[in-house]
Image 1 (tube, rainbow, N blue to C red):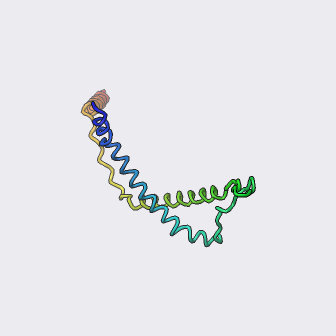
Image 2 (image 1 turned 180 degrees about the horizontal axis):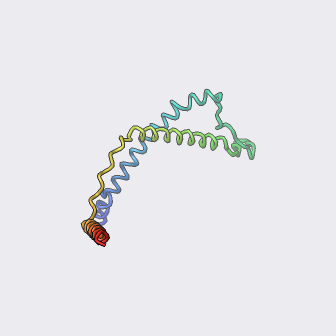
Image 3 (image 1 turned 30 degrees about the vertical axis):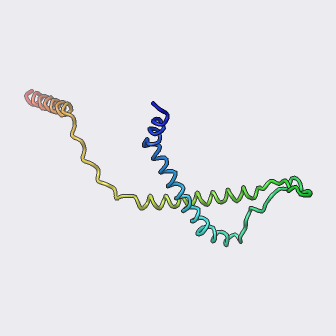
Length: 141
């Protein structure tokens, strides 16, 4: 089997195609979530907290000298990324919860109970016959 044939078989497998579709849809959904957070959720939050932005927070390890930039730990960027992630996670959770609520169907009626196996029916008939026989014997005595 040639390398080209093997590659073609690999590339057109259902799992690979499904994964590609999932990645493409995921990227498009990511844009929707980013827009939701940036354009809809963040403005009211920014207004509520007075426009606080953590990205400027840093710990300078060494000041800038001459043409060399300062060496600093920009922990504000990290904090801002964590807050952005939390907001995105809560937003996605709320969206999924709303979608699941819309998808819920009315409860279906329980299916009728299955008919018992013939062996159980036969054993029940034997049991009933033995009970009837025992009653008849008791009544005769």
